Amino acid sequence: MIRLQAHLFENLQDRSHLLAALQTALQLEHATLPPYLVATYSLKDENADIAELILDVTYEEMLHMTLVCNLINALGGSPSLNGPDFIPKYPGPLPGAVPDLIVPLARFDKNLLENVFMKIEAPEKPQDFPVIAAAESKPARTIGQFYGLIKEIIREGGDALFANGDPTRQVIRRIDDDRSTAVTNAATALAAIDLIVEQGEGTNESPLEAATGEPAHYYRFAEILHGRALQADSSRPEGFSYSGAPINFDEAAVYPVKENLHVAEIPADSMARPIAEEFNRQYTRMLSHLHRGFNGELGQINLAVNIMSNDLTSLARQLVQIEIEPGLNAGPTFEFAPLD
Image (cartoon, rainbow, N blue to C red; front, side):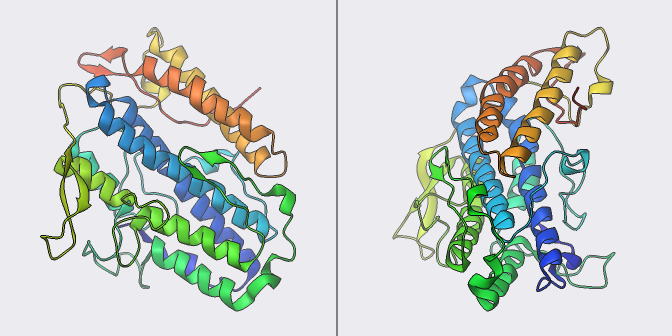
């Protein structure tokens, strides 16, 4: 599980501190997307089932971004998505996290799945991690605990916390199989937070999301690792087992994407270089549209979705097929590119 830096939990009763913490949460939700997407793009058609499972998690992370933006707007703040500081550096820790998990941009393999992706999504109970980071004097706490503390503050403050929110800035749209919801008062804020936590970790009683009955993110990744879908199993005391439909992984059907690639490392005469540069321009443009969309220009959201679904996907799939040095291919680098 990811352990968050202690300062994120401090003084959250103060609106400015609460909004700053939610901005970090927004950056954290976004920072999972590039590693998940690079791994997905590296999978060839033979591994389409695995790619689809990771994409499902990616769509839900996008939903979480939307809900966090709705929370920020409902509390009278303004989400920020369009600056170079919004984009994390890879390899590196996730925004707001204790730097004991270094996240790369890398091709898919089961080591990446188990030691990075599952650690990102792990709930507290299935994992046994140290509570105190060596470099800190205060205990580090988890994402679930972070959102739990925000829920306590919302319960205490009630609807008065949302008096300065602008309901016209709420983004309500379908994202894959889910739909974002408007946050306008304490009840809708608590429901949004519950959805974010349940999709990532499951409920306290079950590894499944309460709303859909699907496995939470950690358990979906575990399905890939174990090669079987998770299903109810009355023969087991836990009530579930990885005994469902097989999920096969063909190790040979993965493009050899170079790990933690940056545009500057791609040879200038390689056909991959202009494609990688265009990918970053479109990625930065997409974030700019999202920034404007989540700050009142709702029509900009559709422009961002079109870039993500069409331009970025097409460019990334071209990149992973281009060799840039013996035995290694290019891939999307997810770097900030100043726009004209």
